[in-house]
Amino acid sequence: MLNLRIRGEQIESQSGEDWTLYHGDCVRVVSGLEDESIGLSVFSPPFSNLYIYSDYLEDMGNCATHEEFFAHFNYLIEQLLRVTKPGRLCAVHCNDQTRQKGVEGVCGLYDFPGDIIRSFEAKGWTFHSRVTIWKDPVIEMQRTKNIGLLHKQIKKDSCASRMGRPDYILAFRKNVMNEANYPDPVAHTAEEFPVEQWQQWASPVWMNIRQTHVLQYRDAKDDEDERHICPYNLM
Image (tube, rainbow, N blue to C red; front, side):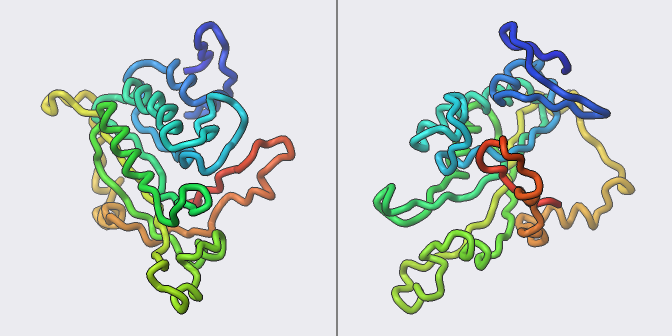
């Protein structure tokens, strides 16, 4: 996958043992990869119009509405289906987004995961599974100051109170036309993958993700970095 060229343009890249890193827009980079060459994709997309990461027109986060975001996102979903091997998976991290009264006229939640599922299915993927990742509502309250999570709201009008928002991992599978001729299964022995580990991972709710164990942006961010470093939880 080195020396990737798209429409005659060289894509900057670095590589090492078992890895290659491309510096470029994700849709353009994926569009240059070979058909059915990827076994697993794992990513967290921009959360619709929540953040504007840059002023580039191709930046998915540079959008005004949810509809604009998915008009961009659908190009990636389509390309991911093309480059994914039959039977293999794509995993997407996301969560519900808040709706603000000053912007949308109401306080509530937007079903961002639901629109992701519908968009993947419309492009030919099969919705395979969902993991709910427990998040501490106290940490969310301290970070967002959302009125629905404040204890004082219980005393004022509990009808406006709400639960905290978990994160989700949505898994999608590229269909295999004939399971009897599944071209590239991924098999494990009991020693490689003990039943106890599988029982833990098969749980639909993961309770052991350390919410504060993240990449510290003050240590990792350079002055010239663009906005929002996306500090995901480290396993």
